[in-house]
Image 1 (tube, helix red, strand yellow):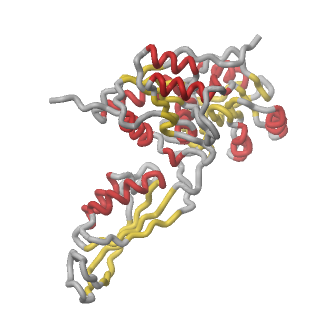
Image 2 (cartoon, rainbow, N blue to C red; image 1 turned 30 degrees about the horizontal axis):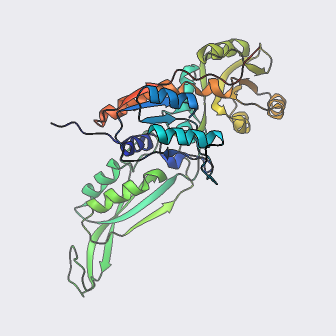
Length: 374
């Protein structure tokens, strides 16, 4: 049997299935940045930044794709010329036939994403999102003829609807009467053209994440026996507890800020840390956010965190934390995110194999923090 060729669009689909673009912040730019979707891919290099070094390594390794955390293109380009860093890298990627894909804040917010990996590395247990979103859910209401409810429900659940916390296959059903009159050219499932008909139907309600909407609706329509399917999609303000920015959890036992900081330093291979707070103060409830997480300071205080671990802390944020009795550990942007290379490569290998995709995922080992501690 001939082996199926994986293409860039298959790799994009895999990345989006794991870390949906809809989870990304509005200012972010994730997904395929440059490349031809139909190009075959057998090897991809995972890295933190789409740098000249990463592209050179991808070229040496004969990789057809670079999977990055930080996007190469954040905002629309006014021109594409190799006179600045972005232009030079784009030209190099096109010349070398290397596609560039990014998973940024969608990787940060998703379950089994960067912040979960960071919490695990720091020994933080029972970690949940620190800041959850309130606009990521939809309620789907669809009307199904009696006897077809299981077929439609199975299609909805298999497409990703019906998840509430640790429960799945969640729905509510109520019985009623539907009326309709088929028009000229229609092919009704029941009843006669030109005549008003009634049928016993079930109103089926379920919940779904916004990023699964197209897939869920497509599967529902295919499974539904009606020629024209009546359904509603209703935006909800319910919060999704399983996704969001940052994480908050607890250490197995209380410790001092200095001792915990030393553990952070070792876990993230940091040459140095910046601390806010007395070294001997007790800490157990930990908030964290890879990269730049100072914007979550108020939420960490509100939820009773003893310490916030993040990077890129500014002076006034440090003063604010000090005034609110919140300890801070600034591990730096690079150190708090570099673990994504190995962990993302590991996830992609496993999930690609499950899909029967033959792609080798390499890890870029040549990245270094641009800051040097002296």
